[in-house]
Length: 197
Image (spheres, rainbow, N blue to C red):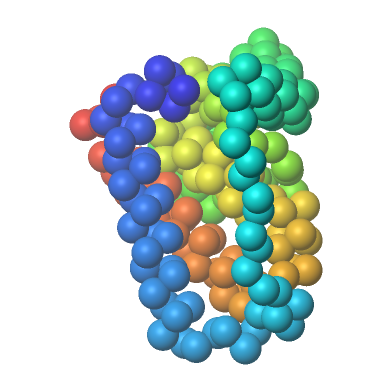
């Protein structure tokens, strides 16, 4: 979906940079020996063995259909909300305002977009229509991608759920690594936007 809106080069670079951030962040957390900052119930959980009985092809198809419908029901409201916000931005927010706040004239646009994304909660499908509308109104590519990454990675509800599994020190490190990575990627995309689009 990202490729269909931003093009193959942007999507490929986005995925590669996301993987680089994940590997660097994971390595950093491992080198700092943060295992003690994982909640005890996570460490004490045994392995989970799920029985997988022999299913017929019809039973597998029925199961797949149920899983697909369940996922669709979870994701669809966020897609509608994202399309609604995208339409609002596209039709009601002046292009000059978007260019001033999130365009090349504001060196803090990436940081602002990252901060604005944190309290929101959506999946990637819900943020793409918003990102498309912002880009069409003159926001820079890296700024838009930073917003998308912040919404999907650092959203407040996600961090609240993550806090149940990790202690505050590890959570703070995770937030720091992700925020710095998102901001760096945003500025990198802004710097090379003319090549990528």
